[in-house]
Length: 431
Image (cartoon, rainbow, N blue to C red; front, side):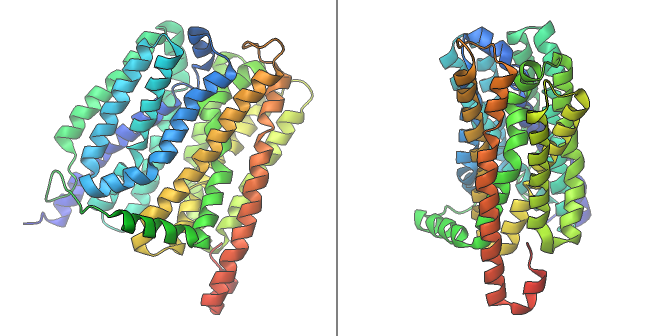
């Protein structure tokens, strides 16, 4: 017999809180290397391109697993997949804490990416199952915003821990929280009000191929893909790896101020999310216009910083991280465009396609920055100069040029399709 709705939704908050904490921990683990980049180069005796490989693996695994994880959640339920992700994250961070060779550390970070990829989709599924439809948009927004606090914890506190406790104890401390949350998952989380664990039917390869192919053929899916591609990579790259070295070595800030800048960027992400959600809710026909304006602002800020004579003043760096941070939640607009362009039965495949875009762009940028830094650093090593960082960060313009061109291209195609299918809707096309 089903539980009364009132009881069901009261219990939903406890389940959501545990799932949210696991996602927050995943974001923390994902971002924990951002303030440890310089220590990692010394510990493992590596150069910039090798340091970039850590984040490259995480992003590659995360992007590559989005569609498979969605299929696993459909098949085995979010509780099992979320628990598996928490365990993998914990073991991977323990391995990273004791890693004393570059190869060992690479393997550990690869599995951090695996565990990370298994969290967000699961929490969203729990939200969709346990909350009334009218509450789902708010709970989804809160999940994304609060989860980003993990990046704040990975900035200032992790900087302090590395300085006071050292490498091994800092990462062991971080890993210990995963044990607590894994126990909480087992005790608290249920897949469904009528069952602790729920399984779904298996999908055939033919069904999977058809769904993905139909989603990719939709111009709105491609528009969402390039929106996600163009907005996210700058903040992701700064937050995951290159922000801290760029501020300390490229702009000669103190380590404490560099950590503060990364924290401010996350605060901007958390603040901009609800504002953008309100904006696209009230102006759904101008979503790509909002995106184009945000990307233009990000490009403008980077141009001012990179062309500033000498090192940029603190106030300018603060403006940079605030504007760049807005790009993170702006990437979520891509999912909304995909949602309104695809039928319900293709939403999972369309979302999986779109979710890969920003991480692919971030992956390319992380690698490019490392290679360019090695190329422009006199005599090799890790003594990166401000000039080398200007060269490296300028690679973003290549990605922006590609992304903006494709946004404009598929915005036109989507409008053309809307006009052909419903001429009356063209004047208020959802773009």
